[in-house]
Image (tube, rainbow, N blue to C red; front, side, top):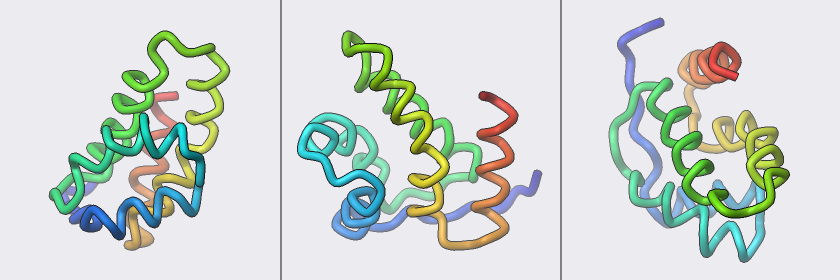
Length: 100
């Protein structure tokens, strides 16, 4: 693991990128606001993974378990959509794999 960090995209760009993975009004109204509050922030690759995991857990609380499973399956694509640097993206994906 490195100590490198990244800056998440600004709000509009981040939303556009998230929608390339899942363009769904329900996600846009419920999941994406939880993620967009982090727009423009500096994070470690592991922090991006945790950001997604916490947002998904919060969003899916009270929803059918398949929702959390489905979003968990999409997590690598979400990470790929937000992390441009190939090395940092791979670090995030490696961390994701280690905690799943």
